[in-house]
Length: 157
Image (cartoon, rainbow, N blue to C red; front, side, top):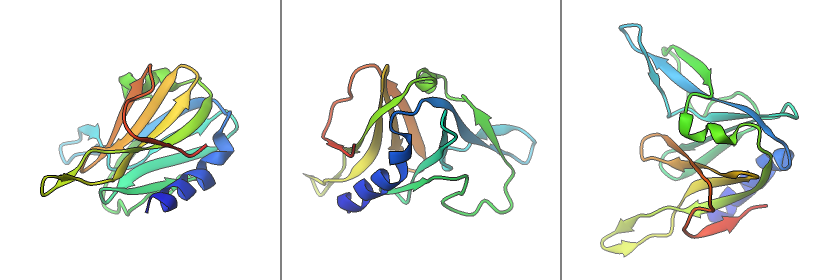
């Protein structure tokens, strides 16, 4: 399972190693009353200065989904979605920085009192820190770290 994730990362992110993150987009869902809320079930879309787009999402708990286009991991039929640029303040430091490496990180999970090896974190090393895209149980989670985050990290590039 880990080997499949590493191959998915390598085949989809190789094109953006060295490229700068020009902008990113996340989704918002329109509610029945017309208000908009973050919809972090859908992927984050990283737009590189080379014109490449990389969409990344964790679906079905530990399934990493990556695409090099604007496709989605599941149907949103019947929902009204809009894409918002730079909508998560804590990760805006990633904008303008080149991608240096990508790592797969182990999450924390235990079953019956024993730790289970499960990779649910994707870490993108930039010149100024680390962009983390992780499984936040029923949606994607995002963070930005100035220092390399702790934990068991598997280099992919």
